[in-house]
Image 1 (tube, rainbow, N blue to C red):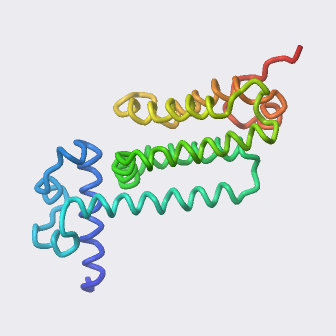
Image 2 (tube, rainbow, N blue to C red):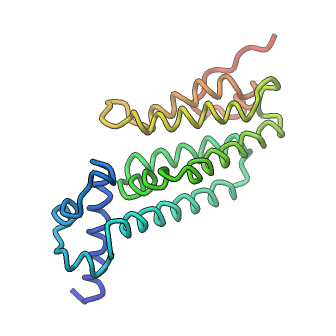
Length: 204
């Protein structure tokens, strides 16, 4: 194997091992020895690629930020209405978090920063605010309050879904079914039959 390719494989092994250990035990409870053991690399090989455990964590945070940036640009560039964009964006984020340990570990590390957590809530809030401006939410719905409830519920799903028979993606579908049934207009619900929502309430 060429030297450059071998270095890439070693670096990738370290990143994946660190992600798996951080995901399993948490960053603070993960010693460097656990990463070395799981990755199968020597301490010297580790330090060739990363000066510290914290440097691996920083690499994971940068990687997940790149993933989310691409997802955001893709969904916001598709020309969907803002409420549909919110649904599709959140669903893809949850699916990736459920299946990709590297992104999941990076996201967990990033969320330790309160500014990062607030930024996600602000992005979701912007979509719901625009949904209200476009007449996609029921008139009595406060988009800021809806954002707080939805964001807290989605974060709770991520925290509580580990080890449960029902995965985060399925639970997110249940959340949308209840939340959208309560905040979206009947017209939006009728126009989006593929979205997992409760049936629209009959108009009086």
